[in-house]
Amino acid sequence: MMIDLVIFLPAIAAIALLCIPRDAQRALRGVALIGALATFVLSLGFITGGFGNEFDQRIPWISGTWTAAYHVHVGGLSVYFVLLTTLVSVAAIWGAFSYSDAGKLRGFLALLLLFETTLLGLFTAADLLLFYVYWDLMLIPVFLLLVGYSGSAEARSAAWSYLLYNGAGGLVLLLGVVGVVLHTGTFEVLGQTYSFGTLENWLFAAFALAFLIKTPSFPFHAWMPPTYTNSPPPLVAMVSGVQSKAGLFGFLVFALPLFPVAAHTWAPVLLVLAVASIVYGAFAALGQRDMKTLVAFSSLSHLGLVVLALFAFDLTSVPGSIVMIVSHGLISAALFLLLGFVEERTGSREIGAFGGLAAHAPRLQALMLVAAMAALGLPGLSGFAGEFLILIGAWQTQPVYTAISLIAIVVASAYVLKMFQAAMHGPESVPGGRTYGDLRAREIWILAPLIAGIFLFGIWPGVLLPGGGSLTGATPAHTVALHGQRPHA
Image (cartoon, rainbow, N blue to C red; front, side):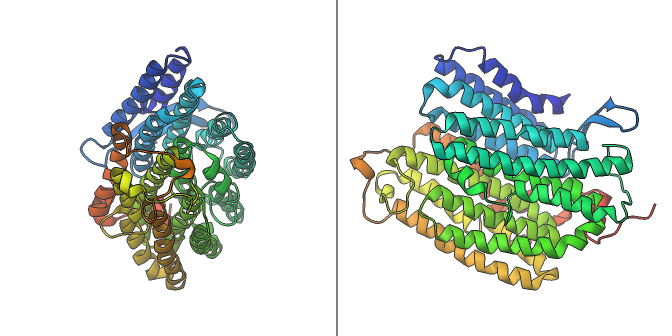
């Protein structure tokens, strides 16, 4: 029951918003924020006493030739994704109060809350049918927010690109799910082991393609730059901070445990794509002038590190990927929200179009400095902890790919410092002679939990790695996936 309340409370809040008049701005904001905050507080119950708790609910759904259940589970790996979702959603929904079109605020907030519900449903799904349903449902609020609330032709074009790419990925995933169910007779495959024979390679390929599109990974990333660049800051904070982890969750929870032999067969291809994402994303970020596009390509590079970690099959790199997933979610959400505050004050996101913000907005500079340094991997911040664990682990099994990936770590310092220096220092200039002030109290509180998490997981990454850095919450199936074989019956 507790899991259901966490999943559906944002949707209940969204429905409540539709019962409030559009011009009742204070009531709309209050209900939306209370719904998001209550969801976050309830989700903290999953870690009462530590990260080792397990919560499970199963209700039979379909019986007959094929069986399925409404089966939701929080524990092990999923708890990290759930907590990341509820925390980032609070910041995004609170940040949406600055949305310029007051007449559309009700729909904007309602769709963000519905988006949170679909993400929570996905990260708690322990049944393949339920997982697939949420996989497709989460496309709808993002598409509607881009089409109806971004206010530009570029955003509408980005919406269709987002829908086509991710919709195609969903169809490929459906083929894989159908193949699994025809072979096993059930959607309830979590924690089970099966022998798929020669079909395993094709099933894994279907799952992997869908997950790589969603992450995104090179060369399936074409939808990402326009979507991230044209999305309102609260939306891109949730898409980059949380939704981009859906494919990685799918790898960890479904693809690797179900198809361990195929995972090793396809690993050389996935490692090449991971390194291509890491290096290409870094150099593409270095060449950008739009700061949101720069952060978008940096996400491509950083999430490529997670794919490298998963398919290096090392007992250090895999748990390191969890630290990197959580860290990237916090850093990217903070950066995109900060860039939204910058654009609100200057009217521009273009590097070189303005400068000298530090002299007038020292609090904005301080928080931007923390998020930027975390993105380039400064020791003591969460970005360094994730990268270090991944690179140390991946070096044990894939030294060549790891060495190539180090190029991106150097380039990251260049593009992050380029962005920070141009915006915060240098000659003071603002387009159109605008005047601007420092961060308001509400904006500081929006960012405070994200910044606190960046410090916490940088200083104490072990909080995400109980058991001394072992595979956190891993089932036997996760463990044998590292070795490319199944346990004996």
